Length: 69
Image (cartoon, rainbow, N blue to C red; front, side, top):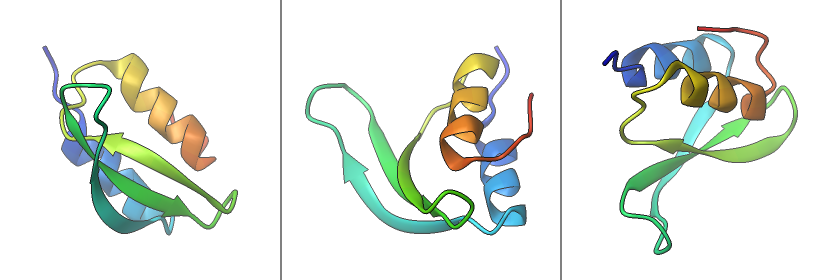
């Protein structure tokens, strides 16, 4: 399975998004980070393990970035 964490974070940086804080979701098993997008002025979670293209694209969409893996 492909791992997308590094590529997703690179695209977030390129598009001006910024890391806000580490967070954890008690409803799920994994930890995530919270990022901010100046494109759509929203915060959004980024999973610590992004193993699917679909999840990577979902994060791009939440950030308002028109980039697809």
